[in-house]
Image (cartoon, rainbow, N blue to C red; front, side, top):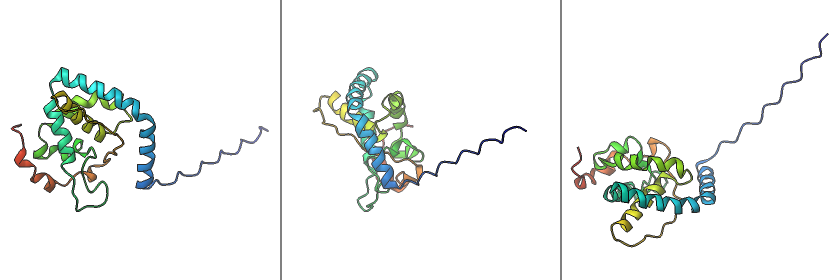
Length: 172
């Protein structure tokens, strides 16, 4: 008779479900450990992008529009909006006040993989800070560590952008 088969390997215990607070702390720790060098490199890469593509105005607008969704009446993140990178997601990118910003985000696409420890929220704000500098303004000190909204449910409601539409550029 052949020997009996080995007993099956025990299944590893299921991973505990991570709370939003735990996820935020974990992501912040990961980014904090990797980010300083990437932020220096990103600033230099942004300078080159702005010089080569002449895109400082749209990058400044991208940073502004991501921040403009902040709502002081909401106390919970990400419901309070603000700088969370949600402008990159549908439905927010499709709001009339964000016309033209998909082009700005597409210019940053190559950076998302290269600077993987930098959140989209930080990248958009870095683009705005470097745009100010590029246009002759002061160098803005930058501290990273912002978390990204991760789901379209976390986008600003369309009503938030209605007040912003009057500043809408003439993009079609």
